[in-house]
Image 1 (cartoon, rainbow, N blue to C red):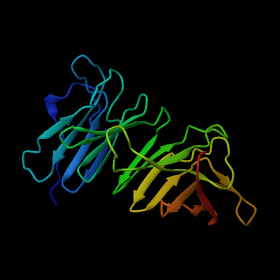
Image 2 (spheres, one colour):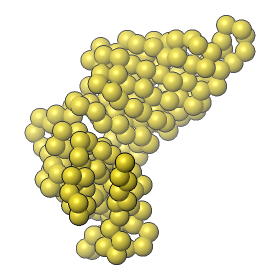
Image 3 (tube, one colour):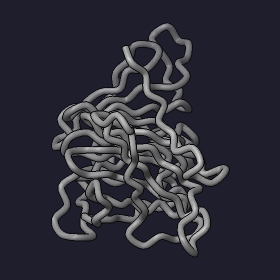
Image 4 (cartoon, helix red, strand yellow):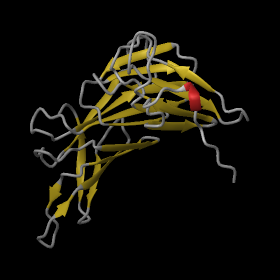
Length: 231
């Protein structure tokens, strides 16, 4: 097995934080450098795309269509098909771009985005610090990864646990996608098990993202329905 070390050595400034986020799709690897400086825009961020089929391992540098100083573009990255998805750490702007940086779509998800997952036709964002019902309840927003015109990534669902929205359960702290199956962590969730004790934290899943009526499995082995709709 051959192991590659992907770095740009002297091409990056100190503290660019290359590799804070990574993604891979086929032979393409992406590495975010959210503190990368761009001309006139300090700490605006960049993403570097590497073709793993080449021996030189040279990178294509992608920046936001409109770099903004201090935005930290590339804090979270994902790849699907021929598209790069990047989240700016400050402000929560999400950009979908081609592998040469052409803008495809963008949407502002706000300041609470903590986790990103991209797979096939879906993009999922975890926002554990947000909550319109309970502080820090969290929720997960699922978008369609096929833009319908520049500036439009349609929202498929906002997901919340159905068994009550509780302060600081932080649903959406982590997210993962595989096909139409979504998993999200809620590390602050407390659900009593059948023995009368307690389970701290929970893994919540939703299968069939077009009609989300699926289940949570917590540490006590219980299952709970996940529902779609606004939080």
